[in-house]
Length: 220
Image (cartoon, rainbow, N blue to C red; front, side, top):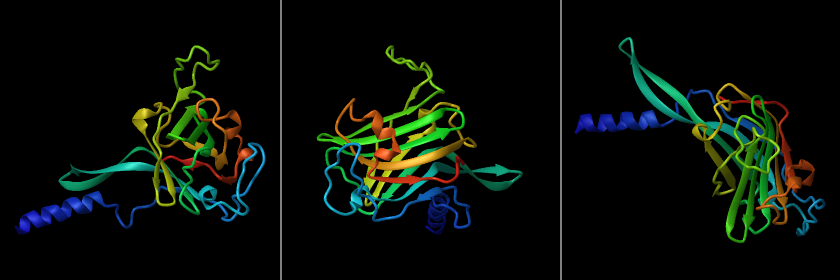
C-alpha cells in the first residue's frame, strides 16, 4: 500500500510544473477600459468600454510534455515543447455573439506574415489562419504558392479565449528558437464576409481594442 502511494505521488509530481522552473510565457499587457472604438466596420456598440472586447493581456507560450530518462544512472527530467498556446485575457467573458471577432497578426522569422482570426456567426466560432510562406498552397485561385493554412479550435474559459496548435500541424520552419515579432492582438465587430472574415479585420486600426508587443517572442 505504501509503495503504491509513493508511486502515485511520483506520477503526480512528474505531471506538475516545477516550482523553480523558469517561465517561458511571453505576455503582452494592455490597458483596460478602452474597448469602445467605432469606425471602420460601423460597429454598433453601447456607450462605454465593452468588457468582452477589452483585452487585458495576450500571452504566448508553448505546450509541453514532461518525461524522465536515465543518464549515467541518474534520473533526468526532460521538458519537450509540443506546440503553441495563445491566451487572450479579456476584462469580461469574451463575446460570442454573432459578428464578434478576435484576431492576431505578427511576423514570423521564417514564415513571414502570420494572421489568425476567430469570428462568431449565428452557428458558433469560425476560424481563419495563415502563414505567408513555409507551406504549399493547393488553392488554384491563390497568387501565393507558399501560403500555409492553419487550422485551430478556440476555447473560452472564464475571461480567456485560448488557441492551441500542435507543432505537428505547423510547418517544420515554425519551431522552437524562431521569433514572432510585430505582434498585435485586437478585437472587432465585423460583418460576415468572405467565410467569416474581412481583409480589413487584419488591420489593427479596425479594432475595438488593440494590444501590441514592444519586443519579439522567442518560441521556447
